[in-house]
Amino acid sequence: MGTHAPILAIAVPLLGGFATPLVARISRVLRDFWVFAIALFVAVCVGFVAAQVFAHGVTVYVLGGRTPQETLAPGAFPIRIMLTVDGMSAFMGLIAGLLALVAFPFALRFIPEEEGKTLSFTLSLLLLAGIVGLAYTGDLFNFFVFLEVTSIAACGLIGFRTWTSRAPEAAFKTMLLYALSGLFFLMAVAFLYGEYGALNLAFLSRQLRGSALDRVALALFLSGLLLKVAAAPLHFWAPDAYGEAPAAKTLLLVVNTQVSLYGLWRILFTLYGGVLDAGVGWLVVAMGLLTMVVAAVMAVGQQDLGRLVAYGAVSQIGYMMLGVGVGLVTLAGRPDYALVALKGGVFHMLNDALTVGLLFLCVGAVEWVRGTRDLGELGGLGHGLPEVALFFLLASLALAGIPPLNGFASKILIYHGSFQLSPILTAVAVLASILLLAVFARAFQGVFLGPRVEVKPELPWSFLIPMIVSAVGIVVLGLVPGFFLEQVVTPAAEALWRGRHLYLAAVLGG
Amino acid sequence: MRPEESIQLITGQGYWTPLLWMAAALGTLLLAFLFWSRGRRGYKRGTEQDLPFVSGEKVENPRLAATHLYWGFAEALRPVLRRLGAWHSGVVNDYAAWFVVILAVIFLLIMV
Image (cartoon, rainbow over the protein chains, first blue to last red):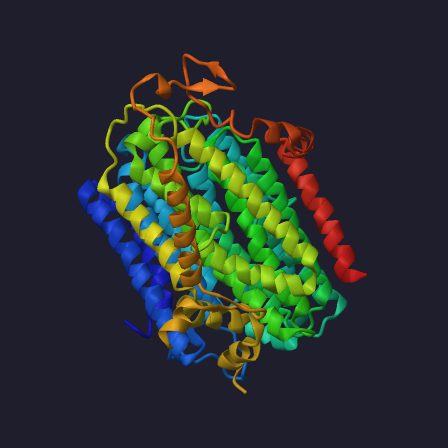
């Protein structure tokens, strides 16, 4: 199984997702077990792949060759479908596996049977397969295919509550913008294929010379992926999408956005790593700053708890962009600080997945108990749901970057890295965090404090266990940041920073 | 990897260790407890002292909604929120128009 773990992490949820309605026909209990078993299997596979990559370097898996390691066809040309997993891909796969383990058990009780639970699991498994596929693929056309798989499944989940007016509208808007994103990405792939006659990422990376056509393709890649990562001012779809999808599924949507961000880093660092100039880095920095500020300010005016958390989630994308953008700008001149900023941006992906994930789980629990997310109607829930109040507070503090929680650990790296480029960047990032702290303190007061209200029914364990796992993750990552930075984040950041030649050599040799 | 390295975070300009922060937080909490313990002891639960007042007025329904908190802060941000809210129009045509604007900026940046 070990050799085939990369492809199994994609194929099992893909086929398992389509088989879920058939399993549900036999028994609903069996279906729940089936879905959880697939999520667990994917988590084990991505964990195994990560361990292998962190220990031995880039792993390549070829489909259609005599062996999974036969990367080149006769003529030394990489024509086969290929999965290429380096430190960054493995890290992204780990995030997907971890969030799947949290999201699927929570959904077991959260979505009622009459609301189409089976269909929601099918879409979730397809989304999971697409996310892992995006993280692992070493081929631009398959990247596009997985981008579309994630888009279709995500839109299905966003518009899942068809009986409401807002969910289908949010799904429609997201679908249209995702289609634009996919279209521009495909055009970029077509330009490169027309110029070089290849789709393999490593091969193209070695061929790119920075011609006018290469730069047109880069502009198309950037525009398509910046739309999908919800970078301001292209973020408008994200609060609608996050706010309207069932809370248990929003976790997967957050990972979907993160894997698009991963795609952006892969294009910039690996594909264009040899010909990129600092101007693109500045664009990423500028859009990152705009994203964190605009989303934090917009969160101030929200009346819906789900949308408020959604804006908080969008603002965190800005921090990741700032960290990695600073890394791009300073890569040539100040490589030591580039690595610090890069580590911060990459570490924040993991921290954001846990904190935003926990916040959405809390939103789901509140909605499940009270049937509303309107901040004007909620209050006093802390008496009946003390554990949810504690988790919400913990995740809010982590999101705002309050020590000693995990959000602070990654943000301090981003602050110190960006300070070297310009203190103004750090000042803006800190101000956005303070604004977020105020917004989430207000939400906590409005939802959990105040006179006691009766809470029925009690929260099931399938809600509490995923919340406990996320909360423990937030605390542990905050208390022993050095360990996780060294073991998981540094291999991922170094894969972007100076791992390009290793990525290329693993596929093309030399 | 040594145990202290697991906790420490080297940032390039210094280091961060949660243990030191927790020690400082514990000290601050102890100080706060000291001040609190020296306060007046006349408070009795369930008496008139428990009655809620908002801005000095006795109120029937004491619940403060989230919208009441930071009212002045949100009010001061109102002009910015109005402008940003207009951008978040909910009309997908506007969102596509923003995409065209950013596309133009990216092309200018990369091609020129």
